[in-house]
Image 1: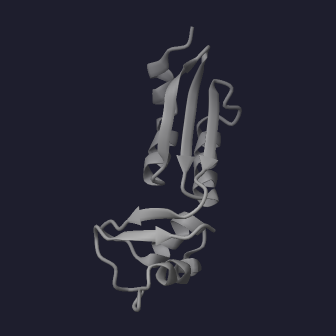
Image 2: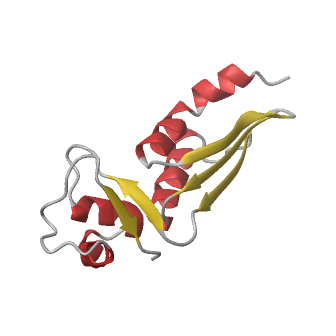
Length: 125
């Protein structure tokens, strides 16, 4: 019988990437002898980062049942220390040059002037 804590420990690098990518984890439990992971990420780029982490832990991921989905539609994002629109654009669109979409959606006259704690609308890709 598989051990939940051992599997969580094995896949900790994946859980770390999910946290870094601002993913929402809906399930992390044992299904039979596999770790069941269900999460929603903010973009296809984030999904690819999670997928890369899974493959780096175990290329066959034979002891992991995962459901990683991308959030649909417009989203919101709360600005953190060190953020800029290019960095946020890279997270949501996989391309730092798409920052103008975020600036326009939030009526930002100067895209360089965002504040920690500010809530931004992120248009669907």
